[in-house]
Length: 257
Image (cartoon, rainbow, N blue to C red):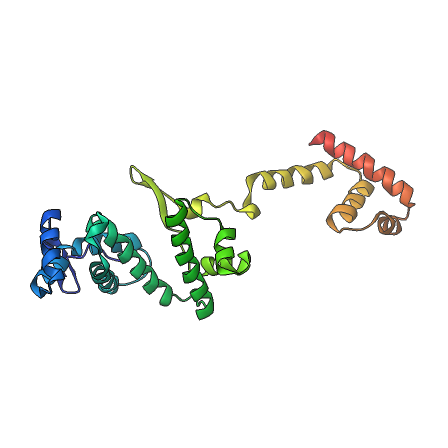
């Protein structure tokens, strides 16, 4: 997503106006009185908030024009719901609103489809979570949220996970001097683990140190999953002899390893 473009939705992002906190409060008083000119100036002066937020969502494959429009919807909602008596800056209140609006847009347009009932459960869980945080001042446990909703914890977990935005494996999580570390770099591939690979080589070399009959017993027992009785039938000896030969072969291999 090319966020370095100068014009988004017909707006020259290089020349977006800046607005001071003092001017914002002056305009807000006029907005409450129904002054549309003040409202337009206020929104235009805060478009930089929208621009800064949509930069967080780069790499999602969405057009910046679409995200900017959705972010502006969030900005308008923030203005309509802002209460000056809360004694917080408008930007502090608006940014989470803009982010939430963009996340809803991305979820609704995601190729990963989530059922309406599960989405509703997730939104109810988020509302309960917010209420508990406000009430207790700490992050609630899933069990507390589930108790408030009157449903199993597993249902709450599944619902919340369903609306979580997918993250690209190529998304950088750290960068220094131009060298970035990506999410895929932090994921361990058990199928390509160096230790497993080296151990496999060592076991093969250890088997080569055994006699032909011992090699056959080890392969039947540990590579083909045969019982000692089945191996005895294959090799033509008793089960007791297979047990002794197996133990002796393992001791030889262990010494080598």
